[in-house]
Image (cartoon, rainbow, N blue to C red; front, side, top):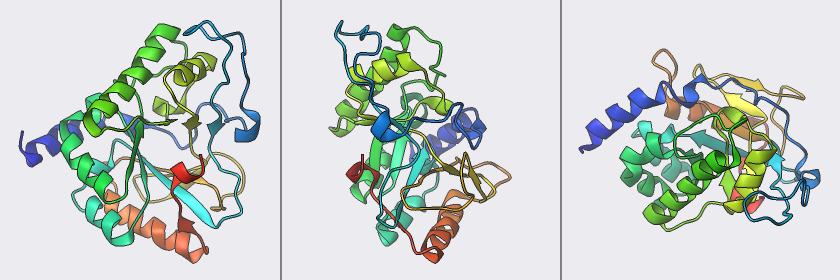
Length: 245
């Protein structure tokens, strides 16, 4: 498949994927330091009590950093790799196999210039309410795909649409996930920041989700560059999320 064809296929799929995401996740995440609930009701996957991964939209830190995350979108814009390389951006990409799979080769290049590749399920199904087996298949299946394709086994997971339940956390733990990542701020297709809670300003430790492109919106690279200017104007910089979680 040519690069042009792959990008065209991906663009069509993305319009029905995370592009429908609202600024806020369906439920507020527990504070990371308080979210570990060892053995809550046992673990259906292995029959043992097990700590559940924390659910975070913000990292407790005094470092002047925020974290940029992208769901199945960065690979659409051929200028994005150049932006990562030029600005040395340690961004985090949460990948769904059925969406990003056609351009995994391009994603390998993004990884080579600083992007981290993490788990966003196999098929982008809403997980909340699904049986344990179905949720585990979605999460563990994508773990295996990314391990096979890139030689890495992700430890961060973002549930599609930001929706999850306790079963999601149990399944994620069984698949080797150590943190479930939501967002406190979201950059919409128009280039505006929306906040899920708290002050409407970026603050150290915020996790920012950058929405996929929309046909009537501003391109991903342009939106990201504007956001970087805003981050710098506030005396902040982009941190590597994996160094903090």
